[in-house]
Amino acid sequence: MGSKGSFNRNYLRMKKHNFYAGPSILPEFTKKMTAEAALNFAETGLSVMEVSHRSKEFVAVMEEAQNLVRELLHVPEGYSVLFLQGGASLQFLMVPYNLMNKKSAYLNTGSWSSKAIKEAKFFGDVVEVASSKDANFNYLPKDYTVPEDADYFHITTNNTIYGTEILKEPDVNVPLAGDMSSDIFSRPIDVAKYDVIYAGAQKNLGPSGATLVIVKDEALQRVDRPIPTMLNYKTHIDKGSMFNTPATLPVFACLQTLQWLKEKGGVEGMEKINIEKAGLLYDELDRNKLFVPTVPNPEDRSRMNVTFVMAPDYTELEKDFLDFATQKGMVGIKGHRSVGGFRASLYNAMPYESVKALVEVMQDFEKNK
Ligand SMILES: *Cc1c(COP(=O)(O)O)cnc(C)c1O
Image (cartoon, rainbow, N blue to C red):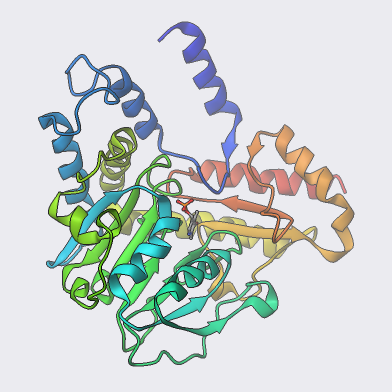
C-alpha cells in the first residue's frame, strides 16, 4: 500500500469515532486481514473475491467460521449454522416459512419486530402478545402470555432503533425465535432455548452481505407446506451454505471478527467490556443536565444502541451539539428519524476510548452552556 493510503488510515484512526448503527464499526484486525485477502488470499496469489467458493481454501473459511460460531456461542448438538444472504429481512420470511405450522407468537418491540410480524402473517395465525408501540417503543413489555400452542415465540433481542434490549431469555413454554442482528456475540446466550437465531452480519460481525442463521434441525419437521428451494433451510443445511454461491468476501470478514472475538475472551469477555462501555455513557446521560436517555427504565436499556435526546429545557441545542460533536470526530450519532435526537452504537468493535471521548464531548458541551 502506498504512503497516501497509510496516511489516510492513520488519520482516520486518530480523528474519528464511529458510532454508526449499521453498517458499523469493525475490528481493525478484521479490516486489515480482509484488505490483505482482497489481494492475496491464503497465499494463493489471488483475491478472496476471485477464487471458487469450492476451492479448498474457501471451504476452509466457511467451515472454520461455522465452527467458531458453535464454539463461541456454545451451540448444542442438533443445530445447524448457516451463512446465507438476503439479510435479517429475508429471515423475517424464512422463519415462518420453515417453522410455523399454523400459529406463532411475536413480541412487538419496534420497527424490526413489526416487519417480522408482517411476513409471518402470510402463513397463519400470528398472535402479537404485547407491544410497546403506545410509548414509541421506549420500554420492553413484561406482562404477557404466550399461547402454548404457538410453534415459536419471536423476539427481537436488541431494538437497534429504539435502544431497548432483552438481556435474558423470556421464560415461556414454547421455543424462541430470535432476531439478534444487533447484539449477537455481545453476551452469552442460551441457544438451547431457541429454535432459530438469525442476524444480519453488518452490526456486530462483518460487512453487509452475509446473514448468520442458527437453526435447530428438529424444528424443521413441523411444516409440510412445499418450500421453494432457496427459501428452505434444509437446502442450505444439506449443502453446507454452498447451495448458491455464498458471499465469499463478507464470510471471510466474519471469520476474522470471530477469531478476534475468541482472542478477546469470547462472548463472556465481550460482555464485561460492553457493560463497562454502556455504563459509562448511561451514567453520563443520567448526570448531564443537557441530555436524557429515551429509555427510562435502566433494566430495558440496550448496551449496543444508546438512544438519547436533549433535555426538555435544552431542545434548541440539538443541532449545536451535533455540530460540536461532529467537529470533535464523532461520526454517526444522529438518531434514527423515528426517535430523533441521538444514538450512539457501541458494538463489540467500539473501543472504550471512543465512548470516553463521546462522554468528554458531552461534558465540554455542557461546560460551555
Ligand atoms: C439492521 C436490522 C435488521 C435488518 O437487517 P437487514 O440485514 O438489513 O435485513 C433487522 N433486525 C434488526 C434488529 C436490525 O438491527
